[in-house]
Length: 366
Ligand SMILES: [Zn+2]
Image 1 (tube, rainbow, N blue to C red):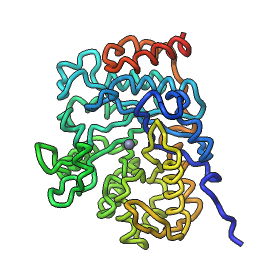
Image 2 (cartoon, helix red, strand yellow):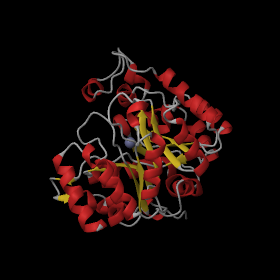
Image 3 (cartoon, rainbow, N blue to C red):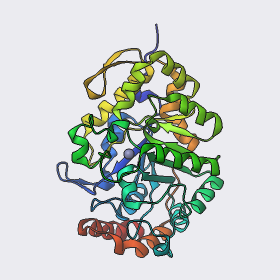
Image 4 (cartoon, rainbow, N blue to C red):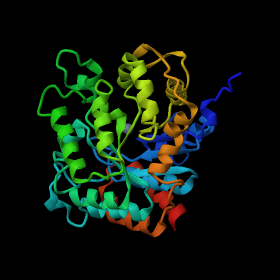
């Protein structure tokens, strides 16, 4: 009889989470304990919180980096990826004195961040920053990160339907994710920036989120994998990618087995967490990979699991993250974090975030 492996047995690491807020009104817990229940319920070995400190929403500022660092300081088995902040949009290198991208990278590394998260390739943020990912302001950072082997988790583009005037659903327009009008960058142009970036930095330790939105043309990923030895993708939904996988089950069974060291698991969940949704996501992705069950998938469609070998499932759901980032989370350098808070706290926009940072900085750093 076959031994049934479950999600809890495989040392899974959720490599792609966020922390959108500092307080959960419903559960009356703050960010510091935001993921305890999730880890407990799902048996995850570790989690990675990717900071989102830039964007239009009032919670998107330097406070997100600081909250991630404080959360890591107070919990075991938390990895964090920090993001860049912009004193104003669009990015103007002349206004970044003392906080140019390379300086910010060095500060985050000194604090003890485990990697860098970039959302700058998502067209709605790109429309604010309005600066090429392969441009000069980022170049010294990418060179240094390539040299250091630092892991970068990058969101580039979105599903093609986000540009599609006829077929884009209303919810995209409500979320500000419809790029079919206005002066949003085209996905062709954005992909070309990543090609240029990788040509200049072929050894970058880069994970492209959401399968790089290539489930309809995975041959392009195969080409990139053959060219760039440290490149990976994550399979964080984007439910649309699973509908792409569904169209070619045999092909993707081979793909996931052959490239089982280039694929990383994540959920894109965030704090405040919705536990049933988080459990559902973990279970969905695990069963898609590890079983041949017919399961209810995203967008209410049924999908059949591809049942790749257990060893491949373990790599994708756990060890790949450790190998690409580090075997255990780095520790926080309190002095560096204190300096960072002092330097940037004037950029925090919401009073609530400011107060909670002051409170925990006092308790945890002094
Ligand atoms: Zn995300």
